Length: 111
Length: 112
Image (cartoon, rainbow over the protein chains, first blue to last red):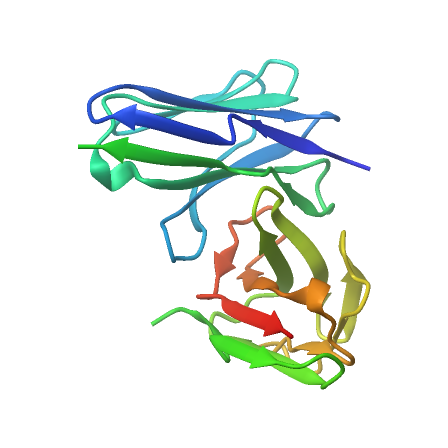
């Protein structure tokens, strides 16, 4: 079945450094979503990417969807302590199929 | 306020004692799902429902049951809980198939 793998599992950065998490699917995806889960909280939707090669930005966050629609990345520029949490990607193989989550990347930011 | 409500938030119980975790959403969403979250494994889908009386297995359905008798409610039932079901559980709903998921606050279950 479909597998979605995410690396790294953990990332520790100093405040102000950049951060990137990568997501790879074993199959071609119709869309990919990104979620953020603060410590002790629940996952919160950030964004959805649908088109091959799509790039979307939200302030310091940049999301990319690969040309082959099998990988994606989330890049945070100049991290802040408010960025702390676990970032999940979630892929859907085709419209109507289940959403499969990656294992998540846990980000800690040292002030 | 639009939300997904789970109860209880925390539960410690013993092996074999049937329990139900309730989930309710007030957004009139068609789709609802249950996930469990374990360290290093991310969120794994247990069951999902596309509409009233329509449910299907996710990745890890063994040991769980669900029902969708009303659109707003999607309870998760553990008929005979075992220690390997100790986990953090999330209910989620979404308006349509390719729409974002809205998650509840989670239920932390400990099965002794």
